Image (cartoon, rainbow, N blue to C red; front, side, top):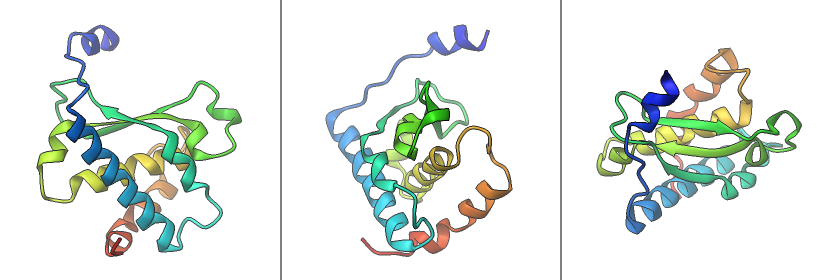
Length: 137
């Protein structure tokens, strides 16, 4: 049922400038994560090949989603584990920091994998965002 409902919503490619804006935001988040010192030993650079796209619209309350690759169990790094990250396109037009916070949230899913969900380790990393976000890039 969920699958049928998903396909009744419009696929969103976004404009070139919207895709560039999302990619630049993802790059800023990765730089902040790299320079924070909290992700030493994690191949954050591998996320730079992950597909970044938009959720089908209307999105409801969902701001982002991390989709895992079919071979995520055998992946050596987060970028191989993460097939794509989908974002609510409306986040591009808000100036409240939710775009970067959502991208960070989805990168955490890619790092920790599908079994962690929003568990204790995920919550610990997510709480670091306000500290990490203070890094100027």
